[in-house]
Image 1 (spheres, rainbow, N blue to C red):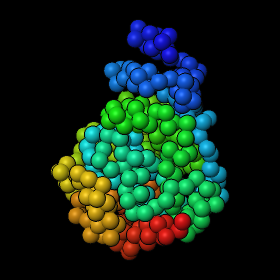
Image 2 (image 1 turned 180 degrees about the vertical axis):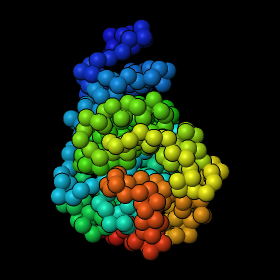
Image 3 (image 1 turned 135 degrees about the vertical axis):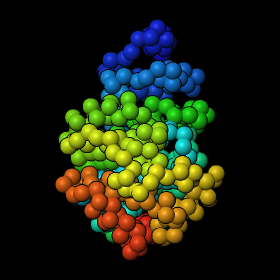
Image 4 (image 1 turned 90 degrees about the horizontal axis):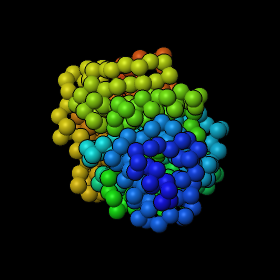
Length: 330
């Protein structure tokens, strides 16, 4: 590791194969926590290059425990996290709305690192038991239209890195990798990213995957649609900056998106929105992000129709039913 760190400290970058090798060795426990922290810190002080990101992604995909869900045409709704906004669990709620609308969702998630409550925290709070058993996951997709893939049990080699990430408590390049290493390899994906630079890198990498994809970046710095600012939307078909008016009469106040200061508070907000009892602002933001999931499935469908379908899935109780069915199907 000393040679690698000296290489990076001299403002040099890693080739794709070098990046893959070092992350593979890190996952296998060849480096101590101080070395891992030093390596991660390099990318807190400079931007990651696309070749490095590609190599890190390849390493995690090679190390993961894959799960075959190819009997279903699945979508993942996942943000990078790391935007520091501490919003409510928007992408997780949107996932249940999409499932309630009749699509199949293979939601990839993890515990919060730089936020109060990640998707795995909220699912665990409600009694969901994480599993990598393909038969259970398929049963959940059949009955609830959704399954949840808790990242650590599909990539156990990363246990050597997890304590360092928790102690650092800030966004790292592992936030960038999360959405790209769903072990079920879904054919459709909506990804929220916290910067325009990362959106461009994701676009470059996702163009090579054959997936239907939509990459979202809110210009207020959010890794999802917040309706507080215009947002960038990059897909297989187009690259556009859209105004909040496509989903809302006026921009929302950032305070309307706050996710609480504890897992309990985050869970309370989560449940109220699924029950149709969220504030108008919360409901609108959740439905807007779900609408992007439906748009990813059906590129020719208008955003207006996607928003109407998402809103109906909440109002009819279908999204809540999907959630409750998932919790009961274990």
